[in-house]
Length: 416
Image 1: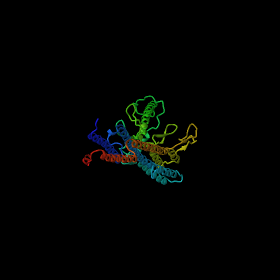
Image 2: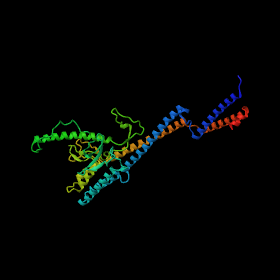
Image 3: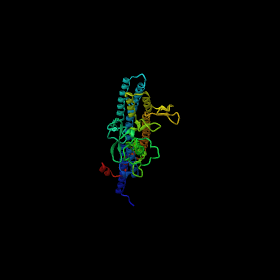
Image 4: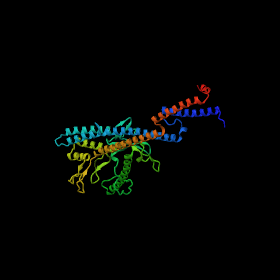
């Protein structure tokens, strides 16, 4: 078979074009740093790169959410333990109470202490309603209104978001129950038809049965509400693998809750003695108010004021059977006061903050891993690519030079 000049020329041009194509690709890789500019150049690597980029985007979103949650928790912690926070106010409250309990204080001096305590009550209320950019740190799932208010009787009340109706409801904090009522449940008792007659044993028994039945059911309801409120809060997906249960509701263990219910700080319910009689409020705000009221009372007694202070700060069980705090079991036990809830809330905030640090470290490691994988999949080795480009350029120049030896001069004239 005779090889003509035309065949040599065509073969040479194809080879030269191939070299030129490889040179252009290497030049693009040097300029962009990417292994490919079109999916068709390396479809498997392109698909893998897109998947990695998608994951990197999610990681960036998680990191932004973690930063947001950190800021909220930091502000919430400052409202408790920062300068002028609840912890500092509570320390001043205890100092004032101890001062007022001094037996040498006059009625006028105790009145001054009562006014100081009332002022500190308002400071605690303001701290409980701390917010930033319209977000209340202690509102749970309620973000539209201040979580705490005072009702017409001066008692602390809590606003909460009712998930069933998507409305804001309000409940007296002392009505909530942290534990379910002791059983068994009293038998059903209809509303008595006759007014209570203290002189009629049958009427008294009827009303007593009705009141016990009503109170038991109310305690059950308030305990259920308390459980729901303690679990309520704003939450975010921080990459923990969000899940839903069989009803389609989000599994709260798969998301991060970054707002707290304020009742975690104040305490709830009432404090009763061994006979079940109410002795004091079970929340911080109202209990301080009761102590202030005792100090300003015309019938003030040191015993009652000291008893109320014990409910606030804690005590060891008295041995005097006449003391309402006496433990009929005869055991000498320590009872923690309502003030302990402030420390519990701080512990919860600290635990959440530490968990966020763990997630942040985890996301940083994940970002580094994704970046490394993306570099291996999508990007070239700059030094190696430059060397390949220089080598390919040298080959291209050599091919051009060789062409001048084997092809007619007219061809190269035409190329020029």
